[in-house]
Image 1 (cartoon, rainbow, N blue to C red):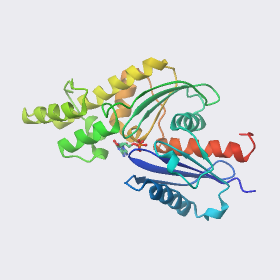
Image 2: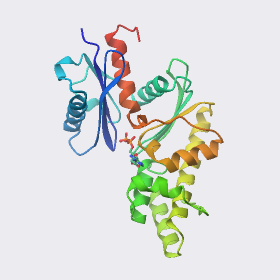
Image 3: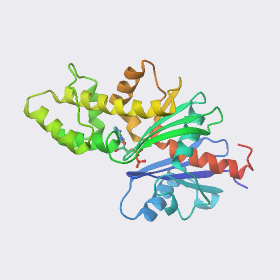
Length: 264
Ligand code: ADP
């Protein structure tokens, strides 16, 4: 039987899929926005990753669904929480990881894990968008930038402003008020990034700040957030171009274990 497996992560903002080969190498991956038809988004995520891998669906031995919309991955054989999948994915890429920080579109999680990549404890902020990707998206928009631009711009700040509003709506008006007072957008952005890191750090402290931290989720692709987190911790954190896919990768790894009868 083939050992090709796929993991499909349906988040609140994006759908990700990772296809793993027999040797656990990433053969294909996909990333798409999530719309109103989540079932179709899940299908599309799988099809796009299989197209990149150049593998027909019939060769996939096992599919695992994860993420906020995991129960909509109807074509899968297993459903696993994104907490467990980010833990597994982070541990696979960076085996020394003991704390995973996942900042996605609408929630932030701090996940403490053991050396087997299993969850020991976790804390999450999902009550509102404060401190999540959505917060950055709204503030980027208020300043007239794409979200991909704001991290690099924040790195050019000279005198970061202090952003005191934790609520997304109030932060948006605070940004607007700084703009009208003539503040440099780069300094405003640096203040926004620092304010998210403060919130993230308090979540991390709830589970215990471990020496090796891996940053996952879409916001890990924001260089300004990586810099602000490292600056605050006083040491580097693990981040990879695959960091946004770690939930999907972890899901695929869970499936791989099933296919191999628990052999890992
Ligand atoms: P979810 O799994 O919750 O749907 P993701 O983990 O995919 O969300 O994260 C989505 C968030 O990641 C977006 O809200 C955006 O802020 C951020 N993001 C994604 N790509 C980038 C990028 N290239 N640069 C900066 N931020 C990014």
